[in-house]
Image (cartoon, rainbow, N blue to C red; front, side, top):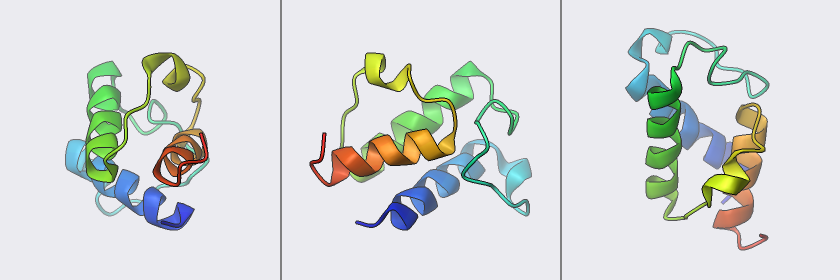
Length: 83
């Protein structure tokens, strides 16, 4: 799977959890916090993305993620067996 495909899945999950973003542009440089997601929303989006991509990421690795680019990169690595 390409990074763009992973980003698309993450965006779909963001819109499902935060429906007010449905008609907004979601930049890969944005953070979930910048998009208005509280800590519960953020965990739900990450969990949904991991489930959909069939990967598990230890919380300690997620701690280093600061924006969507970091999240997409980490998910991409796990999906493609790079990490």
